[in-house]
Image (cartoon, rainbow, N blue to C red; front, side, top):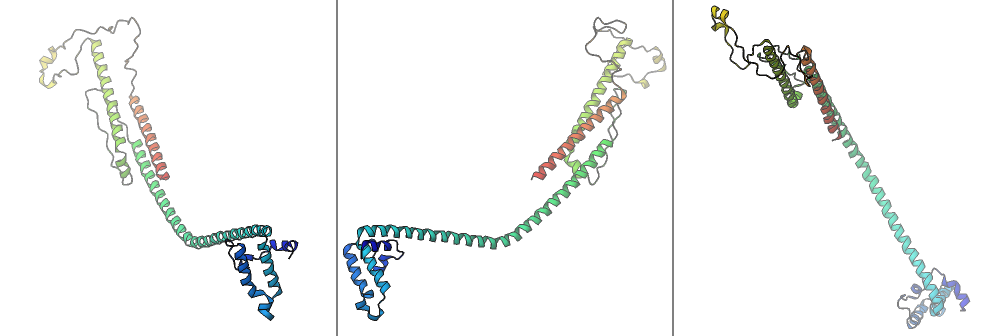
Length: 307
């Protein structure tokens, strides 16, 4: 068969090696002749007789001629190798596509049960959020009632005399709703009491200084820490003849009838404090404490919401 006639078989899809029954790696001239003689028994007309198939015999002869020619064999091998690569790529692609399809179907099957579990978890989460919100509202109501009671409690009245003991404020019994909040805010109440005690001590010290200054102006200086003379122990005659002891003025400052050489930098005038100053100070303290407690409550609620 001429080479021009064999060119059409170079691009054939038939595997000539398989047709001749020879391996691609062992295709030598001797192996090719041996395989040709062995395979000719299946297709030669003298061997098969009336079962002769012309197309099969022509294909058999073309396979032998192509593989016998080195140039045609090289072209056929290149075409055959490219075909095998395409076939393997298709098989690999089909395998991946089949795997993807199976994974998708498995996810769809698992998604049905996962959807039920997810909906159940969402319901439980919603219930927990509602429970936390209800507890937060109860705490806010208890703290609001506690702050209202603290703001409405009467302020202590400032004392006129420094020797009198401060009167303790009446302590109101906490309500059932605010008992838990009062227990939590006990440090804030202790701080308020400490501030009130310091204010009362400052007022007492100021009143003491006023009394001593007034005594110095009148010429009679009786220190507050000196023991007082009981009136019950004095007789009527002793009261008439009793004169207070005038102590020397050891202070270097100007007297009441003298004019100071220069204006003092600090003034301790008795007209500065008023009766309403203490109440106003306490009101400001309570307002500041109330604002601080509200800010603490908002911060705690924000932290609980984030959790």
